[in-house]
Length: 94
Image (cartoon, rainbow, N blue to C red):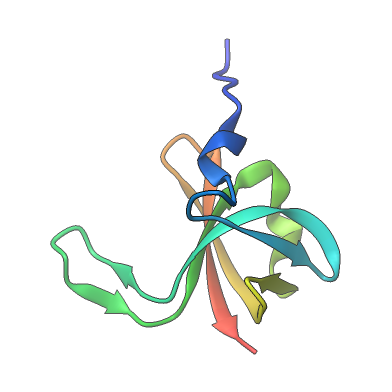
């Protein structure tokens, strides 16, 4: 039986998340970070990333415009995390 927890509580705009739209259509909340880190705490890059619920940002999100927190980005890559319930979107600021 697959794990079916409501992940929306982790993406509350009352905490760290911001609402986002994908190609001007509401998609869901994301947690945006301007830098991402390697496991040892070393900065791996300065490209922005967004953590999101996988079902709200499918493979078809690649190449589309994500508006999050008033900033426009292009989705460059989508990387499933752990069990695939969430994804890390690699972004490029427009």
